[in-house]
Image (cartoon, rainbow, N blue to C red):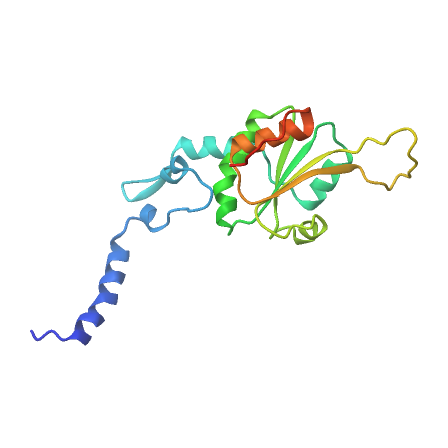
Length: 194
């Protein structure tokens, strides 16, 4: 058989299609979202079918320390609160946001009961993102309850929260915890954020 360049290049697409047809069903789709390695392995093939392991069920049943909130839920949180709030404004397509997500969750677990931590998807909640003046991603907002002194006057519609700090860019768990200690509990200001 006489092989020419055009016949070889014509053969490549056919090989790709043929190899895709041979893949088992579970290998044809591998989730790449914020799922952990265990969650991705949770779907296995047995006898040509797809079965779900208990790892995936445990992961979905596990409650997040830093839950995803809507704009309406955030409004309620800002009117009825007893703990300081840290908001992680992020987007699912943002690389630094995805890198910081496990760090933020780990910090939320460590600060549970002292600081309320939540996540706001700026693509799903553009109106709230505009109200919070989110210009870069990820953005961390450190909010504390506004305590009015007795000599100040004001009505019901006045501010209920004070923005203690705004950090744009991904930082590690240790820096998030250090900033919370500084802004909410009188700890020293961290000299360097990582």
